[in-house]
Image: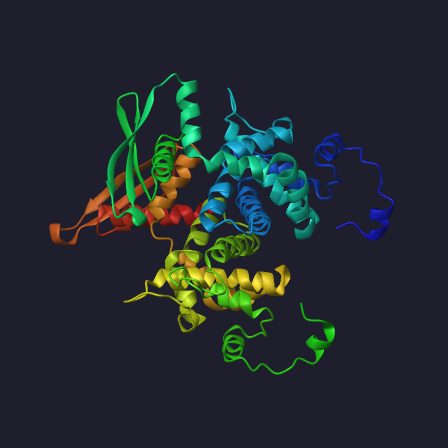
Amino acid sequence: MMNWLNKLFPTPLTDPFAIELQGVLGFRPDNLKLYHQAFSHSSVENNRYGNNERLEFLGDSILDTVITEHLYNKLPNKDEGTLTDLRSKMVSRRTLNRLARAFKVQDFVQTNFKGRIPASVFGNAFEALIAAIYIDQGQAFCKNFIEEKIINIHFSLDDLEKEIVSYKKHFIQWSQKHSKSYRFELVEESGESHQKSFVIALYSEAKLLAKGAGSSKKKAEEEASKKACQDQSL
Amino acid sequence: MMNWLNKLFPTPLTDPFAIELQGVLGFRPDNLKLYHQAFSHSSVENNRYGNNERLEFLGDSILDTVITEHLYNKLPNKDEGTLTDLRSKMVSRRTLNRLARAFKVQDFVQTNFKGRIPASVFGNAFEALIAAIYIDQGQAFCKNFIEEKIINIHFSLDDLEKEIVSYKKHFIQWSQKHSKSYRFELVEESGESHQKSFVIALYSEAKLLAKGAGSSKKKAEEEASKKACQDQSL
């Protein structure tokens, strides 16, 4: 920990790693060893800083909780299922890899791969970086960093919600993009007029992908689309 | 929020729910609505407090992070795989249901079930209770509550570590994760058919890590794996 005098009159950074890191993070890192460790992949043997797996374990959980609390507070009218969906998107492997690129993690990571480095190496190092910030700068600082520098800049809750709001739309876009025909077919309709139930089957080309049930045709189509998107990882 | 005068000279609790809750939690809850909500299962329709699903979403993540940080700090020599195993045990459905019983959640939960209430209802309400404490008393208080009243009282890291269900499984996972080949080799078999004894050697890459003996090949493999995991702090 630096004392208050150092905080007030910091000596200029001279270490190139520290200078570059400060440029990316927007604050002055104190304990550089932590950041070196965060960028050290386990493929590097006898690394003097140790590898980043334990930090990744911690950072993953910290990021998850800050995002969870953010969603809880910002979307007071959304149910737990929607919040879970949104969070899944925000902490998906794909998103983490994207965030890693935004924070130039690839410029810092040390690995011992011969060929191409898998993108997940960067996403994992990004999680480890979160833990390094947490330990180095404290809980409140890290939470603020995640909210200001990650969530507010890199996520739009509106867009994320829209993304999910319609799986049907998502499925149709996917089909058009891949030039595949699709078809929703009503296969069952039951119940009294005020309490109807519908089952809709969704076909891609001639193949049945999923069936969905709901209290309206629209809901049943949405449910079938959701299943199809999830089963096929669309 | 109560002001400092109320904090210094609190009026005695009169609400039976608040009195009972204080007895279980060991502190005076402020915003009782939050706790009522935490104990409200979604099966109760038109509940004035709303159901506990959103709180459960939040509490699950808070508990996870406090436990993650605790393990990270308390076990500096354990790798991420072991920490993950330990955390899985500490936040398993079974553990949550057990914690729910310890905090008498069943005495507070409101449901509309006709028959027996599934144990998970209590575990989920327990997670919601964590979120209620977090919102009601703040982040630092809640973290301290989880450490003092949950982790320190209800978990023994020593016992949990011992519980690692299968060292062989753990060792294989570790090997796969680190792209290391491994091999179990029978090096000795002795005794009569009804009282056999086996010795198995475990190699990682070409290196002998440990030998284990047992009355079956399976037991000898497990023993060798256990020694290897302990020797190498896996």
